[in-house]
Image (cartoon, rainbow, N blue to C red; front, side, top):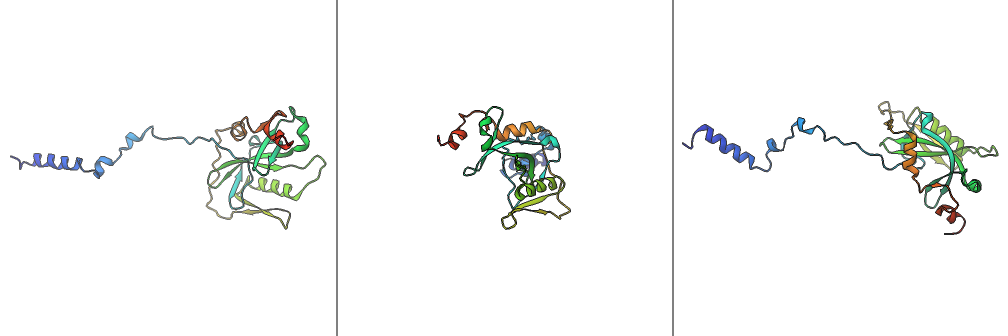
Length: 203
């Protein structure tokens, strides 16, 4: 008979299986989720200053910073590393800075170039206040803002007790971060580099 309970159950199951909104069909068994995890790859590391609206932290490890020579194209907002052993002629074009591994509250990693005193020993408040901000950011979340009237950077520390510790990618050494940030096109090792030609009016 068609009224048998078993046959009714089959009809109900068939109706349920044909329902495109059947939650039983759409529900995922946790055991099938193994192996679906993904790892976010670090493919871009900007070289820049913190902007005035973001709180940042700086990696405290000495192995996550480096002092080098750089050339900045202000119009393009790009920074190039310079190998002065290969091109000592560019020394006057360069500034010297310490690259600090820095991270924002949103987890954006970047290298922050903080200028060091020039060879003549002259210390500018812009440089010293930026260095002070980087040191302070090793222990607390800080915001760095330029104050033109003061001629220096102002440092504000977050007073929120609930901010988490920064999520630096400890498995990625500084050398790899540097390689991502500069790659081969942003390291000047020859006077034929497009940046050098541009600075000398060749382009």
